[in-house]
Structures are given as C-alpha cells and as structure tokens.
Image 1 (tube, rainbow, N blue to C red):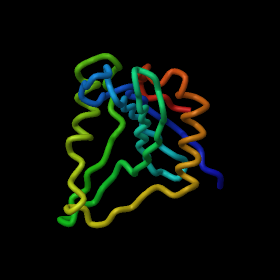
Image 2: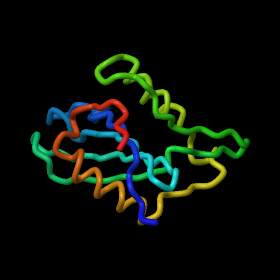
Image 3: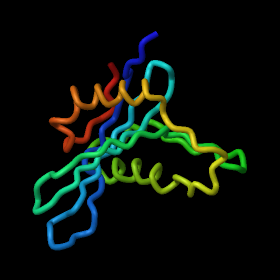
Image 4: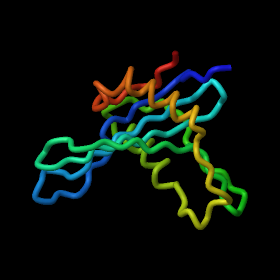
Length: 140
C-alpha cells in the first residue's frame, strides 16, 4: 500500500525568532498530516533569513504522539478551531506546550523515510506556495 495524506491542517507561520538587526532570523510554519497508515505527522517548515531574504529552508518531521515514561500519552488531535481566531492559536500551543522534554519520553521514534517523503511531496505540491495561509481541517 502506498502512503498518502488523507487529511491535514496548516497553521501557517505560528512563530518567529526573536528580533535582531534583521526583522526576523527565522520563520516557523507548522502543519499536521494524517496518513493512510493512521499516523499523524507534524511538519515544522523553517525559513532561515538574512537581511529579510530566505537563505535556506529546513523540514523537520515528527510523530505528533509521544509516550512518557509514566505511560501517559500526549498527542495532537485535529481540532475544529477556525483560522485567525484565538482558539486556533490555542489549539496549536496546547499541543506545542504539552510536548515533554526528551528525558521524560519512553523512547524517541521518528517518522519513516517513506512517511517523510509522502508529507514533503504533499507539502511542496499543495501548501508551500500558500504556507502563510492557515486552514481548517482539509479532508481529501
């Protein structure tokens, strides 16, 4: 079975690095993707800037679910908050702020190369050009 994205939610540019002599040194975009294998992958797409111009980009992939050494599970759940609302921002930061320190995780597990490839190809084709625009949940 080949992997495919079955739904996603794009939060747009949810964070920027602290101001320095440039307006910002980095812009951080986040999206979540549910794949046909049931996994939910979070993608942090980062633009690195110099003098206001993008000098490099990075893709950081992770599973949005973590098991703690205590057995507690913390995970992202697709919420119904609408873009450009306080609830939308809260929805993201509730997940982000609940991410535990590595020392508290039972084990570190990363998406497979196939999962990363599926998400990257989908993001590049369908979201990259409009990455600044937050979305509702999009079901394919």
